[in-house]
Image 1 (spheres, rainbow, N blue to C red):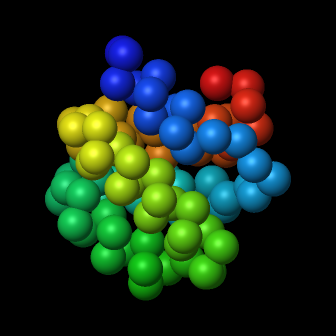
Image 2 (image 1 turned 45 degrees about the vertical axis):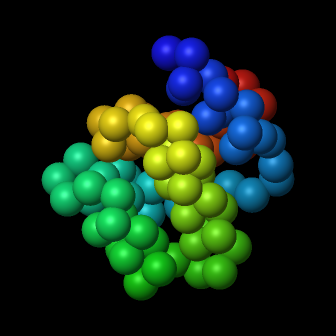
Length: 86
């Protein structure tokens, strides 16, 4: 849980709101195929702003050694995290 808190702090807040369907696709890719597949999926299916922010969140999860399951939870909650209401 401590690592999750650090990840949320590092992601920070911001005005960008990401498409929920895209976040769900990324979450499923993380759970089913891992980090590399999720990164590829993000690069293929998102616009530049979303791509940058989701890729940054995935990289932060990896840097903090979160499991794919914990990273999936972060991605699923990315709009809430960015809103500051986590």
